[in-house]
Length: 77
Image (tube, rainbow, N blue to C red; front, side, top):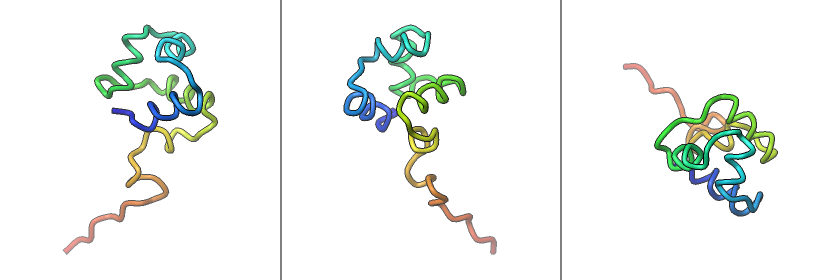
């Protein structure tokens, strides 16, 4: 589930899934499935959401442990 996206949609934008879907030009069901993680957002949709929210794509879609270089490469033995 895209929990950060859900929270930003509700708290920052105060928009419904239907309104976001219309903004993206997709069906409400398609948006709902993407927000729930059942299907992937396209790059165009990610860019549009990034612009709408005023946030980077990374801050919306990447898990926290991967943001800002948060994971270290595994050491080779």
